[in-house]
Length: 150
Image (cartoon, rainbow, N blue to C red):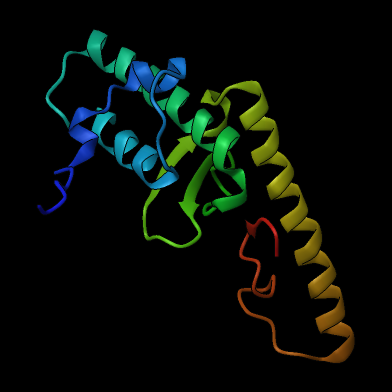
């Protein structure tokens, strides 16, 4: 007898169950849940949008807390330093969040990743100018993004 495949398991997942710890998910499933609950560009009343954004931000904090070793944090626009991208290392899946909307521990971790990347970029630029090497985007290959574990 063939094994039953779970068709689109995300439809069965409840964000409240995930946040309360009553359901376990992978990092990829969590990003999919974040995309599903994101009220941006959805026809939802403002009061409801606010509640959806709160859940989305809590899920993003959970993603950072539980799966930080699989994430890439990017500060893509230096003119808007609070807006960051959260990407999974081995998937194209990503989401964006304003850092001030994350829970304290997640915000702190993201800020430390950005600070590390800036220090590495400055070191790389200093080394590049000493050795007269070509620079990419004036901050070598860091582009204000950090890959944990590298």
